[in-house]
Amino acid sequence: MLGLPSTTEVGRRIPKEAFYGRLKVSAALRQSFIDDVERFVVANSIKTSTTGIPDGERVHEVLVVEVALKARRVPEEVLAFVAQANPHKLLFVCTHSGEACLAVMLKRLVVGPWRSLDGLALDVRAGSIDAAWDSLASLVAYGDAGSGAVTVEERFEADSRLKALRDELARVEARGRKERQVARKNALFDKAKELKRQIADIERGR
Image (cartoon, rainbow, N blue to C red; front, top):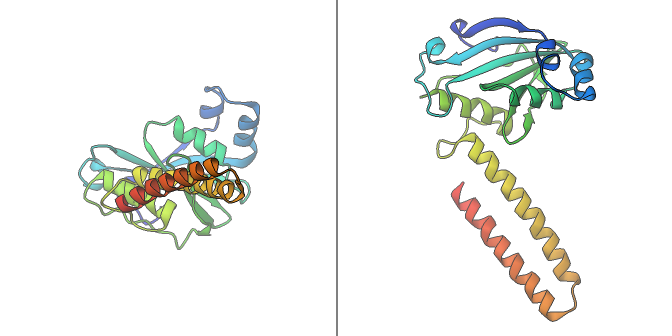
């Protein structure tokens, strides 16, 4: 599957009931398992013994999980629940009618664009299983092979922090433009200046 080495192939189907039957889930989430997902299949296992790639310090195995969907809609809460319940790093391949989209769990679930399943291929050549995971997850989250300077989780965390700081800066600057009381206006100006400093620090470290 996805052009991965045959040595990584698993092909083990996991009954949906293994998730919503044994673990505590809400009624809505249970219904999503039933209504949205046709089946789960562990398609591939990317680890040292199946690829020859040296083991990682953070990541020891990446499971490629095919999620056959009943409609062209990704049940994000279902995938997030499955990822959080599994100790391995998971690369979801959501499939429907000859199309596929990839998804990974970082700070939150990230879903890539739909594309032809036939034209979707993954490259797992890397110096370690850590690097293989960073590359695969970066492909989903950013459309690139990742940054060797930081892990994909660190990169995603920095981006999330940047977004939060930029949103707060926009609110502070908007309040500053409306404020007429000089002391409060100056305080807002100082806060905006500090937010800009924090943003610049993160951007320099990327």
